[in-house]
Image 1 (spheres, rainbow, N blue to C red):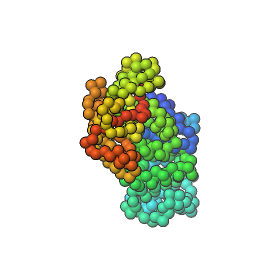
Image 2 (tube, rainbow, N blue to C red):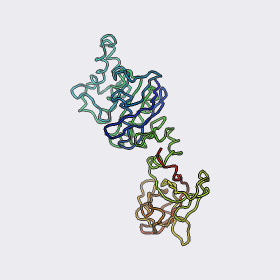
Image 3 (cartoon, rainbow, N blue to C red):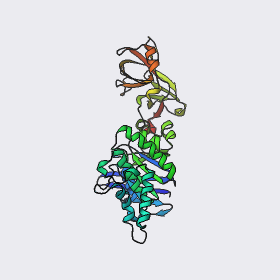
Image 4 (tube, one colour):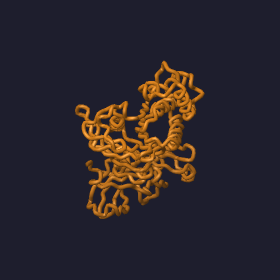
Length: 365
């Protein structure tokens, strides 16, 4: 089932949660709504489910307007962050619940319910826990049971609100892989909300980045990572260093360095923001006259194959209110060892690659 979100807005008192949101989700697609807390992603999910009503706009399922369709009639499965399992029911009874409360005319016979529930428990690889209670399960197991319960009623749309947010990092990683495999097997149109960039980029077919109730960018994980559409997207997706400079005639001046930025050839002495990911910074031992950002190595963290460096610029740039703050760089651990650097040594950091936005790019629409 495809989903069309048209001109959806929602306000809570003085707070504008969503502003004229438009989005298409294709049938069988797995889409992530990604953004910081309070950006509107959960509100949008609840409006799609029918748990909230939009102030304006509409939600269409396969071309049919669902505005006046009750949540029970939307054929939507919903998985919450905190499992929402019935504690007094066994795993089997939890999964069977949605089938048993169906109207008598559409309710399967008990034998069919048992067969379906056991099939679902096998699908989530927990059929051996059918007689246990939620309190006897781990967090990861409870979340898989919650997903099985949502799938029991054969939803046309599956909505997941921070489904792994309450779990520890290792379990989250395992469940992310598992969810992706499960989706590839079932092809249920699915939307999940997360503030975890890694989760969205790893699991989703497409990522929808939301900020302050508006969509900043929609694209494949590779697209939003490689071609961020705004300063917010670049800054939100992964670690990044921010530098301030000037752009003029396709050239950017930044902390004493100049580099070409042909996409901004029309800029005339405009303020510029340059975003540089830690692994795109070259770091060398300082030599007098070297071009680049002169900094002091204040901390080096070497874990496995990667060295993470914290650098403090030696001179604050009056044109750069961001300078004087810590710069993060990443090098292969062996390269760091070969440089023979110690904390307190002077280094020169040079961006190998930067994403530049000139002033008009970061003005909000």
